[in-house]
Length: 435
Ligand SMILES: [Zn+2]
Image 1 (cartoon, helix red, strand yellow):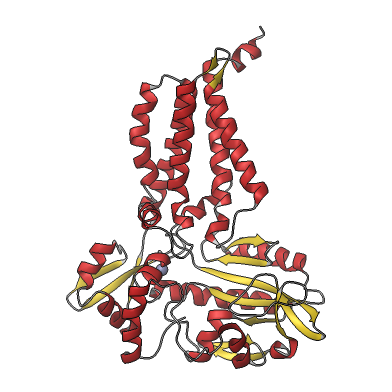
Image 2 (image 1 turned 135 degrees about the vertical axis):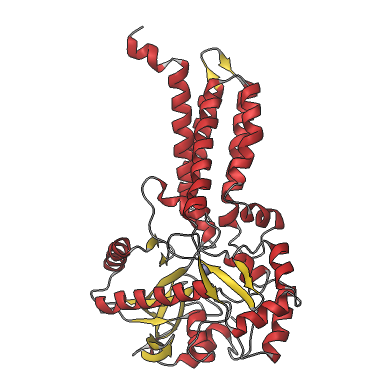
């Protein structure tokens, strides 16, 4: 046997191959999590690729010239399944109505991986398979790096909660915000003095605040830091589109806030919606190229969903290769959805249509979702977040198509009990805030 042949079949080289396969499977899996994070089903090719990689990893661990090591097969397959459930929890928790178990794992997502590895290392010692031990070593390194990165960089700035934030907090907490923060693990909520509550806000260097918990489970307002970053994102994307000469308009809950809440974000806004028309020089390719390049340059993460026809632009900066997709393990996200519309004709009427459904927007002849063209074009402007933003020509009619009676407050995606408490606050409180 040649020296290279001997090296390739040596136990150490086999362990290294198993560790590399695990790393590649992990990277493929965290990339796959972009789908649940955006409420979509993972694409079949991407899912299959991850399954094949996981199978190769397990096969590398369990198969050797001596035959199949059944114990190593069971232990390595079980380990990957448990580990990946833990890793996926924060992204899956984005989908409304997920189970409390997922919520629990998401809450402890920064160190749950390290916790799983503790008992697994004992099993690794009991199963004397050097290839499995190679997988465990690299998994431990990845989980420790994930944990320590946030421990070192999570420096937050103190924000003031405004009167409405405090009113909603007091109501949801039934007058005991400190007890409420402790019970639900709201780490951002602090009580620096007897005067009231403060908020340790997120920034570019920290993980975003966990919206799912604060807004949807507990019925609180969007945190002041996140509101500030959403504002930044709205201005940034609108100015990119203006530079391109692209026809665009604020849409969905963002437009609802501008129209119904006097130019403010909805009280529990969790993303910003801007729509853009593909027309003339503004093709899908040109839009993607421009937004991706500019976003990378200015420190915004850009994720393109071509099949669904939208671009997700996030406030957090793009990560370094190869761990760019590890951001999908974060519990929160400050995001703007840039959805494309195209010109079309449906039932003899000129329409603008988009691929994904939105509210009660009707189906068009081609199977997309659309509105009459003159409802949007030529776009108008509306006061939003202290500035002028482009909006549909008939914003009230547009919102009517999306939400029916949009002046009626509807509590969407919020846990029933939290929504009910919030309803009482909003009826009697300072102004109506909802989505
Ligand atoms: Zn925040």
